[in-house]
Image (cartoon, rainbow over all chains, first blue to last red):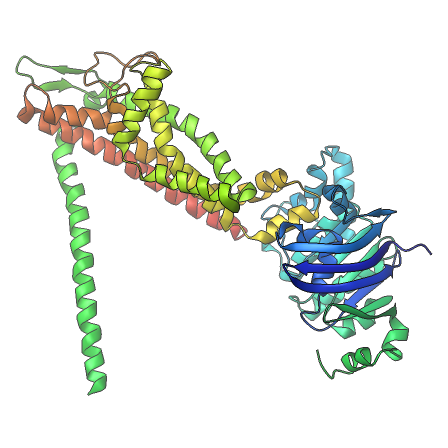
Length: 251
Length: 290
């Protein structure tokens, strides 16, 4: 199977500080890849480099390449807005807009000039369903998103990201600020979504990776230590560092 | 012992602060009291709507209709120029150019502009709008001058209001493929809107009460009719007060009239401040999901 994302020799700097050190990996399509590792190992920086969210930092600098559909997304002339439509993102802290539920989900479509009402309503329903939120909010679509609970807000953010029909969805510790029941709902939603799109999720929670991931990448101090099928890696890690992390010696 | 000392200290400081606070409240209250008690006597419907005239002793009679209208028109036109430009400039400073040398220079120029005395604005307006642009002494020249006075207030409140919006919301918009202007106008601006409105109201209260900027650019002490065209001179409330108590034929008899005008001005500004409070409380509710 052709890789969805091919990362080759990716190094990332903030100023002179090297955050990521020549990462190379191939992320398989239509699956869940979990990025695990102790805090400060560069997990978030890694996925934020994929959709170029780090570009706004002046001292940010990346070397190497991230190949998506045969093109290097890191190249200066790669259209950044188009990249972000194809590679969506859900953040650590739920960040809905202070608008209605409907306007939140449809924002990405509206800024792309989609006006067909029928189409918008269809996508609205489908996206909320995919994020397991539709049943709870279907009668209150014009309610302000700030009235939702934290877990619901995060699922709304997922629905919002899914509405623009991305091919890859990046999630940066999406459940770290959320209770266990809401976490479970998000995990179930991710497993369903991963049949159609590629998911890359950063998590500090090994159990979560074990529950949902098809592949796991273990980062340590800016380096990719080990990358492979989830089950294999959890049961018989090849590297001593991975083993120590998984058994809880540090992290 | 030590404990008692501390309580004593606390009491002394509390007393000093209370006395100061009460003194300030009394002085503010007495300003209102004097203006209201002296001004209320002349106020009636004729005073608010009819044209000013003076009797043979030089005592003002009639009303201040043209001056209310004049102040209203120059304030409105001044805002029509300064609000769109000021808001766009504020958005530019917060969303596009928030770092670097050019930003620092622009930022400094805006705050300097805010500190320039209003009489200097008046001279500038006279030199540029009445003479170079050839608008003459007119409503248009005065409005433009007031617009320049309002600009830094609007720019700075817009910039700060936009910068107060959490970066999370911008990232959410960018992650959906939004361009910078789309994030600025569709996400950040709506959140900042109510704070920006308070800046606009603040600016309008400021320019409605200014005398110096309109002095050399179009205000006149007497006009026997309501303003009719943008290229004509006009009467304005603050300048009329100035004229009545400094240059009118019968200054003593004109003072009550001047207090009436002062009361009208103060009431206008109080109304604007109430408007600010309403806009603020509404926005707080909407951010809490109301």
